[in-house]
Image (cartoon, rainbow over all chains, first blue to last red; front, side):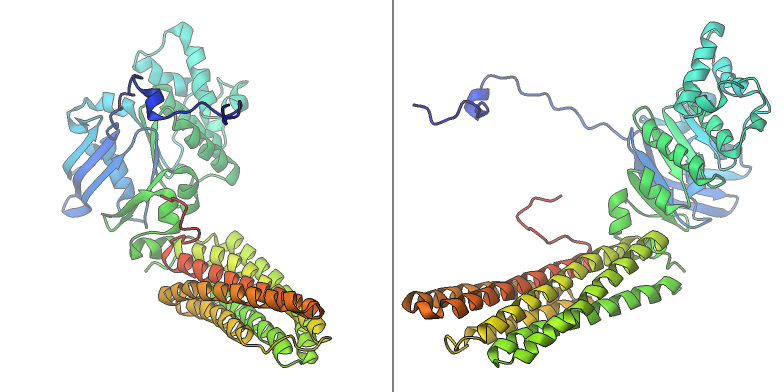
Length: 277
Length: 221
């Protein structure tokens, strides 16, 4: 008589599996964005020193560090917004899906790598037009589809319910938090692969901040997100990976939970515990 | 730059150490109530225990307030988490001391079962573990914390030895069952005190280097 009870799960010994096809190993995906030995100069002033940093797809990477440490400068190199700064110069390489961002058409690059700034900067147009604008110039929606696409972007930015009855009013009539979410919705409308957020919540109240943080967590499924923030609790709440910059150098980049509970570098420790300087 | 809250962290640690010294003293008195047949010592333990309980509540309040208001990170965060665990362990040590004191009052109603040889050794070791674990906290001394963890094996060995010996006394003479059984409880409580000191030592290692050394058999990444 068998001693194995009926309810015991089927044995899964190597013998039983013989002949079954082996699962094909999936190659580890490369990083969505890879910065290699990036130096950056404003005229003669060197703002970034030899920064190498990978940003993995579908993760939120937070950049933290004291004012003037170069975190925004680094972020602005990723979609070449810094190209517009006179006398600036970048050395090293930044790859988006293994392609040098300097070899990508800049308009196309900025569609793929969207950006939201510290101060909300809606266009002086209606709420609807703010979202529709990017779709129109990119030829991404027919007239008949426009309304649906606008609605979807506003929904993704958790703004739809608040503005659905006043889509044709001026975007300036919205509160600061709503304007910021409108800017995020505008960035999302053109389906960016990467979203760069430069202090997106610094001018917002806790309720708007919470909404944007929720949004960032949801965006992970469709986007790769990089956020610059002075708010360490925010970095801790929303990011998967945190990079600490100091005086233009990357000091440490680790999984967020590790960095905030047990940082490797004493300078990181001093900064995040508020004993810096 | 020294921050204002560092003084609060210092105060927190000082209160924790004070609470630890009260518990350690309670253990000492409770065991010596048995060894010296001194019931007054046992009563003193029962009288002093509420002070330890009050400190536990105070510590919890302080830790909760610091977590909420300072939102600490890194070493500061680990100190508060560790202090919270140590707080529970110290309070439990106080409870074990009370258990021993209660056993003592019952033991003293009977003639002494046997000469006490292992009991003072065991209590000396357990008290030493408590003291060393708290010293390790003060000095942020990982080596000292590790030595506390090693001493626990000896305490466990002494407990087994006392159990065996007391069992033979009880089998030989049923008249001693009552006090001998209470002595078994005393040994059990001392062994638990060693476990709490071990927990404190593990928390000290977490506070100092951020490594969780509890349950080494678990595979952690």
